[in-house]
Length: 286
Length: 157
Image (cartoon, rainbow over all chains, first blue to last red; front, side, top):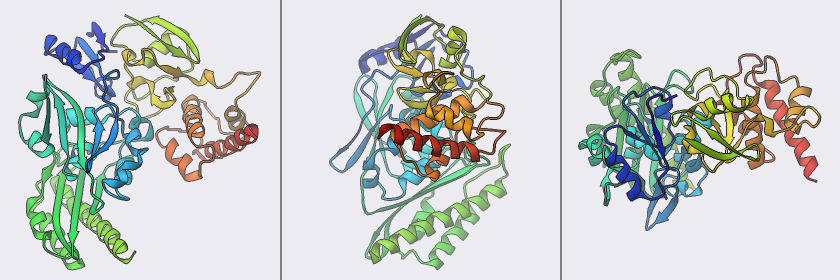
């Protein structure tokens, strides 16, 4: 029980929710799935602002973009066929690897992006998909997710609500996501999102994010540069994995050592690239 | 504060602390068969209930989120006189040992069969992967769910 809480609000309008957040700052917490609030006590929290009644549960395609409302759970996202327009055959396996079916029914897209723990899966995954994020701070605003996280996003979110994530739809995207954990429900010790676009057999555009480093997801621009303009051959895969093992931006923490993370970074990249290579070659033959 | 919702198909209204979880309220208000939350973070599945038909760990659901919604515990399935096909199948297949995980697993199974009356073994295994059982090794439970799916399909004919 959150013993210090004195009130649970259930607003129906974004302006109302935002007003409550400002009124009770810094003692108010927004409640999406609520998982982050129930597993550890927050003595400073006095007011809870439930988001269930706000118009934040939607999944819709708008002009080449998949818009996912902040209160959509991972389970609901998995059940939506529009995922196939984002990254065919790859987004569902990535989402299914996160937590358990029970927890996927509670974890919300907005909650995960707001908390943005360094080990979280959804920030790394949506960064890899070059997504945007919508917020409401009295006005509706949209940011590139990468720029949002590079700025002082925690300060912004003290006085704002996440409303949605916007994911570019692209049947030409080849995407793979991997995470390494000790158990099925554990947080990742390392995660990695790889997104490649091909043109005439060569990689035109690459996006690779490494998360749970243990730091926040970081874009691997040097590795992307090594891939772009090349065919995804065995030698290119070998070369990029070797480079990552030389330069992986990882550290030790109480879970695993830097050396093990370096090794894992190379393994995840190799597996991700091979998976994409297989899908790309199958699609050409089809 | 007061919270009103449907519990096992009946309207209920409880005085609650705004910082309580659904698990805490159910255990206090009616001794519903929601097993003691072992992990308190949703990872063991013992305290599973259905919230609007979706299986969730009740220890992770703050009670304020439940206002106006529908909650089902294992009591919603059947009773000693009239067992639900899932309950019958679990008993017949020897799928219950200590029983601690069973209410949660039954509800996960019910939600699965409501959505998909003919799940594959792989789909059953996947859906059960959030519920820990230390006794059985899961084999009889999976077989019981397959048997219950058969029984339910026969009932619907």
